Length: 201
Image (tube, helix red, strand yellow):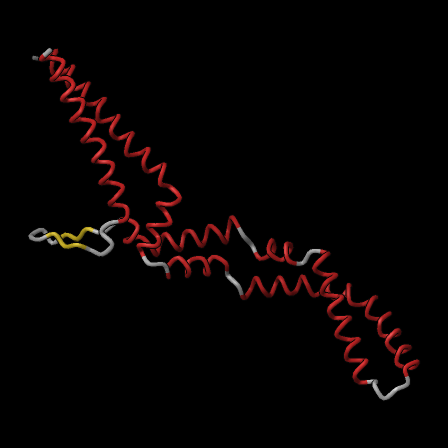
């Protein structure tokens, strides 16, 4: 009975040590948010994420830019046939309104004939024009808009508490599993130590 209690004691202690070690390690990912100086040894402690936040933001932004989203893909999603037709209809509507206003002094028959002629030209040319210019538009947008830099800037604008909240909301269950796993590993090590000690002594 006494042997069993010793073994259980070491298993429980090992489990607690393993669990607490992982809990502290996870906390140290985020805390302390600001450097804390340790007296006498002139050493500062700061959480891993607060310490590397700018590097993390840069790497996330670069990954988004290189691997996830490009201006070409955004352009393809925006400039669909449906959207191109909508743009063409909007342009034709605007041209018709301008013609109607500028030619208000003309007889209705002449005005209708002029609008019909312009309408035929617009119908033939506007779609071609949109197709030609859409590629240039995407290219210019790619030159002027850097998605990676935008993501990096947004992340850097977050408060550290907000970054911690986001990470915990995404990985809360996984971090909890790491804590529990630490407890199991600690308990297994405690059991191993108890058995070894029993054979040695």
